[in-house]
Length: 455
Ligand code: SF4
Image 1 (tube, rainbow, N blue to C red):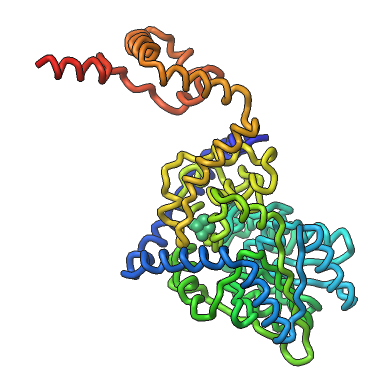
Image 2 (tube, protein in one colour; image 1 turned 30 degrees about the horizontal axis):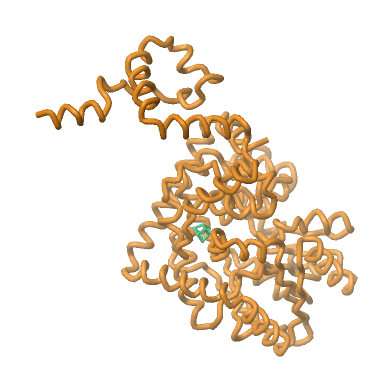
């Protein structure tokens, strides 16, 4: 199934689509208010972009510096070339400690590597402790948003899920009651966990430490209670110095949810006395993306989700329509890098309006990269034949002044005689299903211009 087919499923529920659209637009407007309250916000964006560009241009150096410092701090550092290695390393650490109960805070990388199914298949209980993540884990679904993983669900859906899995009353939809039920349920898992897995928001090369940002404090509770902490990070999470961090923490929460800062910004540099800390550094296609000059800037992403909240296509098609770990505009750049064939429809799921690039806190030229991907996919023959041939025909038509003149005249005078059923029939004209065709002008611009010259 391509993006359009999956989106049609989501749009089939018109109320949910409108609600999803409005909710994310509300988050976008919160972001705008937070941004306008910081006069130097554009300077921060520029600085963040430059820091990330610099780090990516010297990634080998900063990775080695980070490893050296982390080892000096008593942290075990592991390198994983791909998802399989990442999963195998983590399972190995868990087995070395004869552990079977794991808590995990939000980590898109472990989602990308499908860590949960791997651990469960090997007899390990793994519990996601972020509330939104736990809800979708109980429902056996994937996250639909980077920051708000259960944003596609209403409180009625959550009430039904908790009734089935956590024993709340049937029909209970009070968010406070539901949150309290989740809290009690998770607390028992936190206390029993032997190993805590976390994501990494930033890794500081100069100190060898990692930084984790959450609003629920779940990463901190898990890491501080368990004997072993495993942090999973992509190679692009590095920043050179600790003094660079504040540039990103000022941008991240404001861009994500309109908060001045995330509730918890925790630094983990070394294991506590008698405990163990591991960091797994993962490539999984990132080096390949780094080697694509047109797309390497996508690795600057700090996963704030702002491009999703503003995207008119994402807001009305839902995160699951992308069928990728990272949905939305940035996901449509990252996913074809991993599997071009599977994700070939994603770069076309965009109006190219540029709103994503405007809000991106690290100034990624998202819509330009989406447009570029379309060209790469066309050259690689990864677009449907109908699109390919219609574009070829259109190209010929638009580059021939004579054909364009005759075609325009025919359309201007003939379109009003076409039956409504033909101009609005889904099979003939998908564009017109939800739109009215505009009234054709009486003359072309060219004709009008010639008249002006005659005067
Ligand atoms: S591409 Fe930019 S706006 Fe989108 S999630 Fe990444 S940092 Fe945020």
